[in-house]
Length: 263
Image (cartoon, helix red, strand yellow):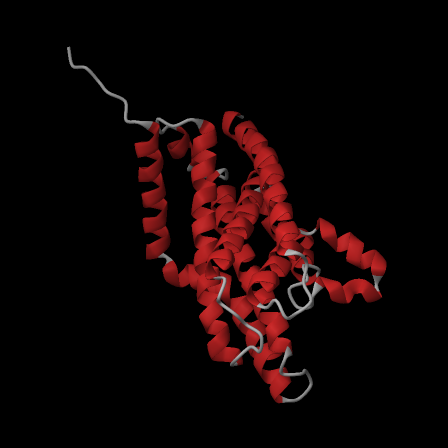
């Protein structure tokens, strides 16, 4: 009689992660276009053309760059988890292949989130030098706290990756357009990516209302570590808020994932 040994869960987890990263590497062109097109256009128009036309001050670049970095990171993390999830739970039922792996359901969900975090941080690291090329120098930009910058990027990517898990399991294929129209688009415009949160003091009710938007904390957190000369939220408060978003989105996302996987 042949004795069978089950592979350790850690080995299965790493193998699944390596597979997904290999797939992402093969589709790197599509991934870059999907996640960097909007941030690149924003930097060209608001960071290069309008300052060149003297319709915006040149110093606006310092405010814009951390916000655009947060946008690219958020879009990449959300889309890299939500879109495959919507497809996997669709007609093809590709999610069943993952669920048949010798791995607990919550670790299957965690692996998807980790892939989103990696892709989000990767997108952010590309936007940083890309912004320098497109918009030129940003007065007040500092990389002296690069470790803190990476830490803030990981926190932000974790928050939006877990949100991607939640949205990807809560939304059907025919509702994906609705998700971007009613959730992602307002999040981008009212996420303090193009203006500092402190500037919303002129509209007090809106300054308070946007605090429900996780992109506010990603944008303000990046400003706090990259451009501390610009008015910004306390980075520690931004980090705490992103951690809370991650925990809440993970709880709801995992609950929805279990429901869809079992159902």
